Length: 407
Image (tube, rainbow, N blue to C red):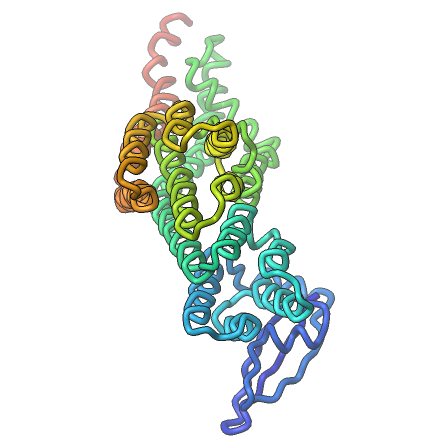
């Protein structure tokens, strides 16, 4: 349920409207970020108005998640009480859903719940790997560092997504124009050429037949065009659920460029978390359990689980890494070598952090070059589409002489 909170400043009289996705007026007050110099008037948003407000309100997502965790890290660094820290974040987020989540978590904390348990109930906002990191921070007593790390990770992900979207604008425009040309040809040139060739008892060239098939779909069954569009929208909307499927993760790992990004992203999160827990003197088997839950990719979940089992069977950490190095891809032997150095020098956490930093630096470099990586694929796809379209349109013209001679 949406709650509309009108906040009036007692000094200036200016009103500010905040929408909070919650079920009680008390939670709505918390989620609105009301201060001592404001009065509040709360009303329910129902019916068609609620649907309109939900569609037009900010969706939050990555930006709100970054703001929330950055703000919490700053508050915890200054020893501000946990519940007040959450209250202070209400004005940092923009979406009604995040405001409602802040209110729900704050109420759960007042009842004595652990922060990780309270946040885990907001599963649409905080995925399992984020909750696992928060539990790791609670275990290690280093929540500010964990929150900063989550915010940095979300910021990098958001930057990559923005670059991907920017890189897809040009091919999207050209593809739209291509569809427009196909539709235009469907109403003009293709029917005329079809009638001409039918009168000559001659077949149209194969590319033109394919264009005619597309034209028939656009003219007689236009709703079929909506299927791929709806499919793409559903894929992006449920991407977090899709990426959690092991078969999808394995398929992404096998792709030439994307596979490298996926591996380095999963490895950076895993090794950074393990270093944090070891540095906080968490028992190694427990640290590996938490790291396994934090890892979002099936390869690294399996890797840390098997390493833990080897540790319980008496192997050292470098030996366990070496036995299971095949899960780490091409960098497996390198990482095992660093772990052997760590065992000799006692600098395990430093070297794990070094591995994570190297991967994160590489991911930053890829993010900065991602538009250049997309460009060659775009050129090939657009060139093929435009060339095929031109050939399909002009092939009947070039073949007209043969058809006339046959007649």
